[in-house]
Length: 288
Image (cartoon, rainbow, N blue to C red; front, side):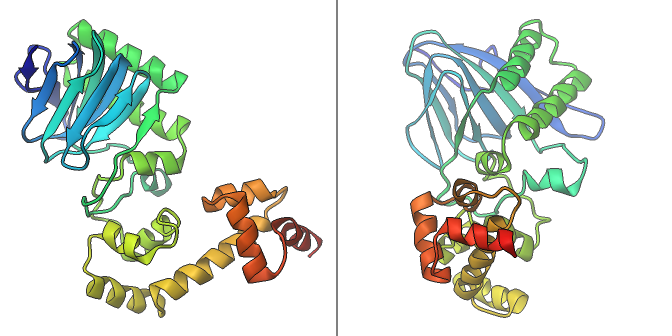
């Protein structure tokens, strides 16, 4: 049984700088059962693709998260990381970078907008869709040929990888997946608009995600919206119910999905706020 660091292992991650000074690269890591990859202080963000076998990850955000074959997970820089193989001959692709380099427009960047407080985050895992698997297999082939030491090739794969993310995964999936990444450019209103549904309109969770103190959060919220967080989220949620119910070809399932709740919960809310069923609310807006 071996224990080794990513940065000292013979197949260590090869990161190169492009002409803009950004850092990116990848490595292919075969590890056997009970072997550990140990990194005391992760110096860059990494996406781990489990190509074969099963691994267990421990880091500053969680302990013992299992990632199975055909799935990927994200780890943000700055903390202790231990990756343990749970099955013989497990194969990983580790893709490292210092920042997401997609810069096409504001809408695309919204996919990667996240919060600044890293406490209490549970990193998500995502299945490797066929299109993403095709990209990953291509990267593995290039790594094993020793071609990813060239900065232009590394940057090309970096761009392809993130474009594939935004093409084949939903905004909710990507936002959750890359949650710990910090974008200092996001303003307070955008943060609230983008995330109040993610926390099920729970003010305490929203404060935790924001990384602000209770006093500062409430003060900033009232200054920005003119009302308390609880009042605003209730009114906004009611508006969203009406908004999605009035969409062309809306259905009860469609509205519930857009709001991130179950159909049963939607029925309870429309009864409470509008004294009707979701179907009746949808039909009402069709006739109007």
